Length: 385
Image 1 (tube, rainbow, N blue to C red):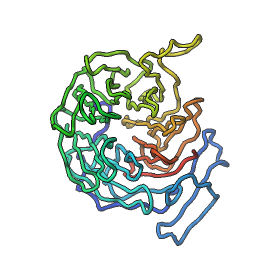
Image 2 (image 1 turned 45 degrees about the horizontal axis):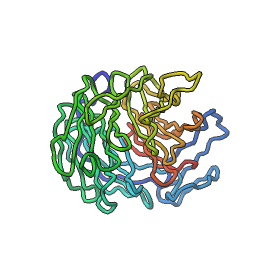
Image 3 (image 1 turned 90 degrees about the vertical axis):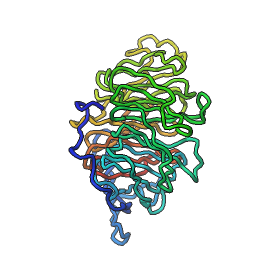
Image 4 (image 1 turned 90 degrees about the horizontal axis):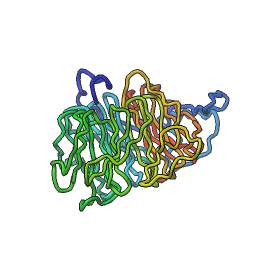
């Protein structure tokens, strides 16, 4: 991302820190959207499990060891992105310290170790959807202008992908086979290039096109025939890969698009922006005409207000719940915000971090979310289903 849009430290990180741990319960209060302190829930517990304090009982909604857990000690600098594995068993997070941490979701939340291979900040990551669960593949993008394909559990670098000429801000994976490949990656960076990768067969881009400005968000369509590209022009352009042409554009944001995420149904797109909004878009090929009285862009379904950006101008990302009824996004004020997609209501904010929260993820099977922060930690917790 351009220097004017994101703060970069003088050094991209120190040597890899020691393995971290999952604290048996992080201190956190759930704040209702109306801010009523009387509706807050606070729980605390010592890591040794002996000195426990319960202020108010909480109805459990997941299989986590505790309702809220802090995953700490793995990183020595800001954590920029986080994601659950497709089966929900593992968590991966990447940092300015040039490493990727791997954690178990359940049980003791063990830190499985750090993956080191990038020479600069690791900016974005995603998991393969096609690899078997016993050999999960992880894809990471970096400010060193490369991507790496990892065998996540044994830490082996399977392939380095080269082609960009600047910071890579975003990487995404297709939902299935595309154009003869079992799985494709798409990446976008400060060089204004969008690149497609057949990661199983080559370390060079399979295809690419230039958009003319730094790219900060990329995502595949449901069938992989299109990619959604967002960046510094404040719009999301939908490119037909076969022709490398814009099919249509999603207009309405008034500042840089920070992320793009396709809904589980494949019919809606979530976008976050530096304008402080989250927007939901209809991305069906032949979307119906807007109803009479519709306000906003033709494909705009809903604008969700209240995304705290903060002064650091980081890429704040969002995520869908598995059923598509809720979305969640990080924030520059150290909180996560969760909205009802059907009503647009801000359901609640989840505090707990002491720094900006650039990325969040929803568990694929349970009402669990994980967040990463500039405070160098992750928070794993359950939410109401």
